[in-house]
Structures are given as structure tokens and as C-alpha cells.
Length: 497
Ligand SMILES: Cc1cc2nc3c(=O)[nH]c(=O)nc-3n(C[C@H](O)[C@H](O)[C@H](O)COP(=O)(O)OP(=O)(O)OC[C@H]3O[C@@H](n4cnc5c(N)ncnc54)[C@H](O)[C@@H]3O)c2cc1C
Image 1 (cartoon, protein in one colour):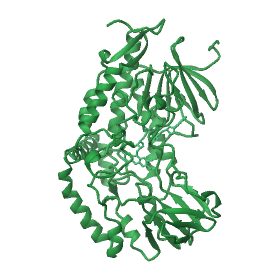
Image 2 (tube, rainbow, N blue to C red):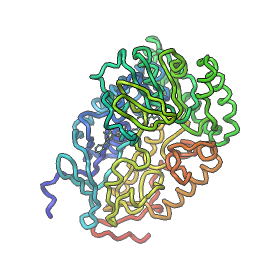
Image 3 (cartoon, rainbow, N blue to C red):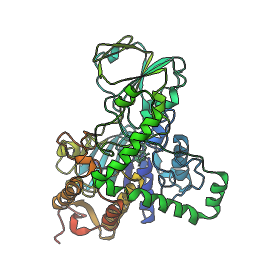
Image 4 (cartoon, rainbow, N blue to C red):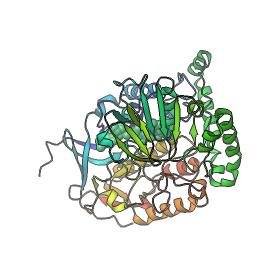
């Protein structure tokens, strides 16, 4: 079939969160202009566009959680709120001239590698496209999860996920149930607690919580950052190093006893009721699950209009929820703070490689990728925030920017050597996977005594990079042809080395 009427780009980047935007900028720095940024939504922004629940904010200091090539001297708070982050991504898109590359409201539904024409065929909600290279910058936390609770469809009230907040439904004076006590819930629970009539929070596992110490950045400081950009760079470097050294404790769980003691003390200062305190005390090592950062979550639970239920949920009926102890909780609204589908990365079920099988099927329950970014059998295909790219100790933007170095390196190498395609060798992918497993041994994530979403059902860490971000940056700085199969332009045949 002729492809002439189908739009073609050298690179199709799917997703316009921090990952998609950073990839576009790095490609341009490498001399590429023929790229398109596709997103299923009507605006750029990724998680900061979608997660507009009350209290939404970043957990990493703003001067660190931003793109290195787009410093923002005007962050209002030490931990930026969602609206400011969303505005930041939009502004970077405009100021760096990326808007003309955008195709919005364009959900990508399927990708197929065409080994004959040596390109990717994309099926999207607005028609077909082709691209020589594809970047799945579709985020690891983009698809919300709502648990399959018996009777949910019978509920007469309003129910929604935190990332799809119902702003048209006023919670004031309502009886509200919150399911889940993860990073999103600890932000919106204190934000809605003062207004609701009653809040029933359903907790499966308590988390370690530490104070955020968020504060406004003074006008004078912002002015200083604007006039002396080097000062802001120093602030970023200092924040980066302060976060980076924490990996030592994540890799030596015994060292976590100190922050654990501090977190226990913090719990004591925030919650007066000893019974409630006991329910909120984790029984696993600090850092094993994501540590939650909040100045007001714990004390918001110790209020007369809040109950914390730890019995689990048996079912839902017209009036509300029934817990496993048989107690009925009548509510007007249910809010799911139940996180995102992390077992399968978005679109990987619909990305068909050289042998015609989808990436997620090849992975099964243990996703792996060379440098967490490229997968053997999937030529010219890259994943931002792929397997083992998540962090527990630093800003994930650091990892994403490292990934873009590798991606631009691979796309640039193919161009410079007139290659049709590159893909990692199975051996290079396996070596990287073995290193991840070795690095992960004995860390707080694998030996911290908890079952987190970082681990698959066999207990293998498929999500977290268990080393330093410096180590990962070093690996991704230069494209190594020896770790790749290199295909000539005419046919899918590896160039003999
Ligand atoms: C509420 C929340 C708070 C967070 N806080 C922090 C934090 O404090 N610190 C930290 O380091 N990380 C945090 N994260 C993790 C966050 O995922 C990363 O920091 C980062 O923003 C990920 O960027 P991304 O571009 O990879 O993905 P995303 O921001 O998720 O962007 C993915 C984009 O892909 C698009 N997309 C998905 N599927 C398709 C498709 N089929 N077709 C077309 N487009 C598609 C989506 O619409 C979206 O715009 C948080 C995540 C969430 C959800």
C-alpha cells in the first residue's frame, strides 16, 4: 500500500509531559526538526494537566523538579503547586517554539513496525501516520486505576478518581469516602477535610510520612534568581546533591532507622489519639514504599469529622461502602486515590515489534529494557520512563533527561551512519537487566519488608533505578554501537561489526 498520503515524520514523540517536551528539545539540539509531538489530550502538560485535585503539588523541590535547559526563577513555592507546574510546561512549549510540532487530541491506538519499509505505522484517533523513530513518552503514571469493588455500579452518589477530579461536584457539607492513602490522597485529604461533613478514609497500608516544610519563595529571592541565574543553578546543584546522597541509605536499609525514628516522632506530634497513631504506623522499613511528604495530612486525620478505616472494603451499595467488619459507611461521594496502572506501561500492549508481537506480551510480568529505554526486537523505538527509571531518592526529571541523551544519540547515530534502524542486542539488554537486579539486591526496595508497586508479583523490582542518577547519566551520555544491532537502509539485515 502506498504511504504517500499518510503524514510522515522522522520522529513521532507520543506524549507531551516533561518527557515528551524534553525529548523534543534534545532532538532539536542534535539538529532534528522533523518531529511531531502527539497527545491524546487537547493541551500539553502530562500529569500536571490531568491531576488537578485540590492540594496537588510536587514532592521534589521545584528548583530541582524542572528541566535543566528551562530554569524558572519565578517558582512561587519551594514545592510548586500543580497550576504552576502546568503553566510551566505550557510556557516551555511556547518559548522553545514547540507548539508548531504539536498534534493534540490525537490518541495513538496502535504502533506496528513495518520491517519492509523500515518505519513505524501509527494508528491514531485522527488517522494514520508513519515515523522512522517513535518515542513512547506516555508516562508511567498516566492511566488511572479504579479497583474492581463489588457493587460500585450500584452506588447512587458521585464517584471519581483523583486524576479526573469532578470540579462540578461541590463536596462542601457532604459525606465523603476516600479510598487509598498514597501520594495523591495525602495531598487532597487535608485540602477537603475542613469543608466536608464527614470524611471516611480507607487505608490498606500505612505509609511513612515526613514534613514537607513548604514555604513561599520571597519576591527578593525570585528577583535575585532572575538577575543572577548562576545563583539559581547553584541552588539546583545543592538540592540535587542533597537528594542524591540519600541513595546511600536506600542501598543500606539499616541506615533508614534514623529517618524512621524522626518519622515516628513526627507522627506523635501530629496525632494525639494513640489508637489512630497505631493505625498509622508502618511495619516496614522507611523508604520501602514511597515516603509521603506532607505538612498537614497526619493532623487532618486527627479531626472530629474524620474516620480512618483499616478493615478493608467488602462491597459497595446504593448508600455507600461496607467494610470487611460488616460496618456500613453511608456517603454521598467516593474518591479513588488508588493510583495508576503501573503493571503495564501505557501503549506497550499496542506496540507491535519486528516479530509482530506486542511489547507488553513479550515482557509478561517482568518488563525490561536496555537502559530502561529500548527493547530488543523493537527497532527505532524508545520509552521515556520505561522499566527501572523511577526513583525513590531524587527528581525523576534527571533520569528523563538522561534518557533523552541516549535517544538523541541513537537517532543521531542512525542518521550519521545512514542506517535505517538501530535496536539494542538481546545480550546488552540482558546485561543491563542483570546489573539492575544486582544493584537492587539488599536495598530497601527489595529487602525492606513491604510489597510495593515497584515490585512485580515475583518480587522483582521492575520500576526503580536502584543506583545513583550519576551512574545512570554516565551510561546514557554516549550511544554505544557495540550494544546495538544496526540495520542498513535497504533490508532488515544487521551490519556485520
Ligand atoms: C499526581 C502525580 C504527582 C507526581 N509527583 C511527582 C514528584 O513530586 N516528583 C517526581 O519525581 N515525580 C512525580 N510524579 C511522577 C511523574 O510521572 C513524573 O515526574 C513526570 O511528570 C512524568 O512525565 P512523563 O512525560 O514521562 O509522563 P506524563 O506526564 O504522564 O505524560 C504522558 C503524556 O502522554 C499522553 N498519552 C498517554 N497515552 C497516550 C496515547 N495512547 N496517545 C497519545 N498520548 C498519550 C498523556 O496524555 C500525557 O500527556 C508524579 C506523578 C503524578 C501522577
